Image (cartoon, rainbow, N blue to C red; front, side, top):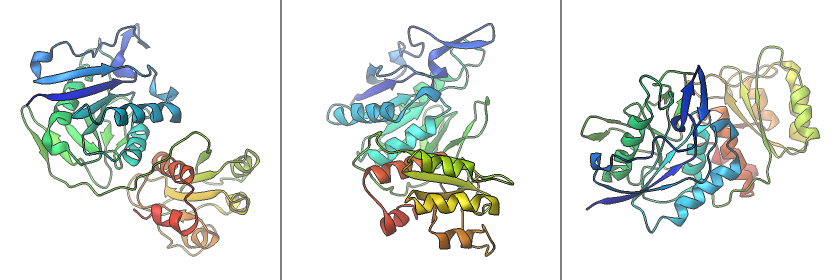
Length: 319
């Protein structure tokens, strides 16, 4: 039976052209799938936004989610084309806010459609194949890129220009695409689901470095932020010079989550010195289990939108 798929195009390099070394948006989406005889598919396409991904907002992510929810009874699967810079954030947002069995696949391109070796159309067709495959059901949001299938939770952009940029540190892909088959070799762990999402909460992200001071922490207090994610050093440590600002953040009731700036491994409360992980945990900092900074920010934002706090918030970041 022919599968009915909705493709949601949002912009990005996959929809751009290159001229004299500059990459620019074009009027008509070049990945518009005209060669429909390549796949036995009933394909419909939607264009809710057309933006480079650094321009994507939480409201745009909500709009994409709403289109998918409105189409649950009409489509067998969904494909979202997206710029690569913030693709992982949109993917993870959708993973945390969609509780549907149909496949949702996100893809993009590292080379515009008229560059030599353009990967856009190939990734697009690969994503349509994944969205049509019965094996893709009930696996959460998937990212398909360069013949690999990754989970939204674990995937991240690892290279500025290489077409194999999307990788899943600590975990690897959960599946691959061959010329005529799709193979899944990992099962997906169930994720938290959040019912409410809105742009009324503010969550910041600070990356730790040697001699980090307290200026950015104090700025978040002054700006009345609701949450903060800190990318700590190593297994989750901070310089003593930042601790005054961190204390004022915590005293202001700003929920603070710690991840590592290293993209492999997880944080832990092991070091018992000033600013060490054990010290930070005693101060009330929440430790995240394996998320990177940008994804922990999305998760904290959604948790706060759903009025999750205290011990429940700590539990949310344990998985």
